[in-house]
Image: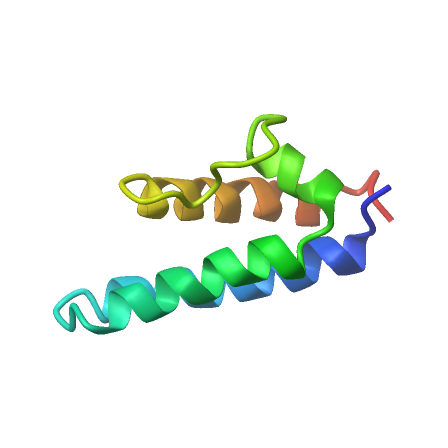
Length: 89
């Protein structure tokens, strides 16, 4: 079971990455660095159950090329909802 602390940690990381990604949109060399760090975090630090929740129960493909921004925005929105859910401890 995913804990509130894990959700908050992931939310903080992804929200920060989203802000950096959007603010550095004119600095194209920064985008691949941010994308890499997000993919690395999702692969190595995100609990598998939470990864599945964010990726519509798929085992892979989250934050893939061509869908990075929409996946990141969707993940931030889902995590915010989970973070604010009073039923998750």
